[in-house]
Image (cartoon, rainbow, N blue to C red; front, side):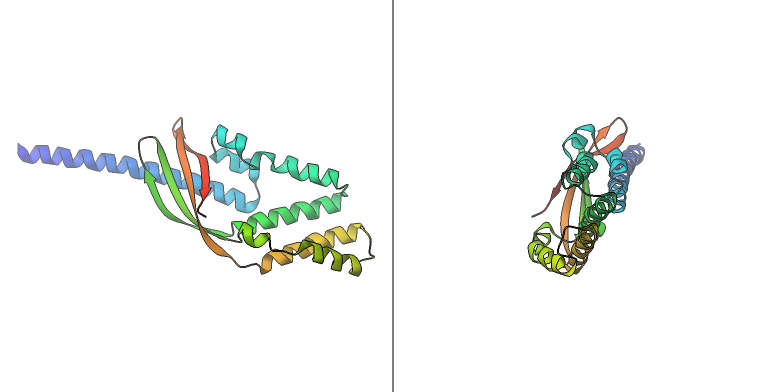
Length: 191
């Protein structure tokens, strides 16, 4: 009789462990899907992995509008706007160039997925000497704000980003269930 209770108890523990492991796997798949979409520049698709509240406050939802607004205010031609969009996408891809899962923790209400993200830091991005580069490019290309100049400028900026060092940062994704799916509710980079 005692063996039966112990066996039932072990079975119950194994079932619970299996449920938790399954939930953690689903949470990891959510974060993995999100990161893959970000790396490819598919920001609208990345939103499907996030909660409605997170999407409202995330810069993803306003990315396209922001790029369009800046391009319009700068009076960019289609070629210039495309060069600007490619530069912004390049920066994002360099900030999230690689990642690996560090750990997953789950409690009753949420799951925390920790990633080690390899990429260029915001601090390093701020070290690019944009003003000097702009002055040098103006001298090289007609000394005007021609379309060639703007396209060359964003290409030169991309090359500067490529020369920046990459480092690892821990990023914590907090996920909660919406229905039966895990959704990202917040994201915090370790500083």
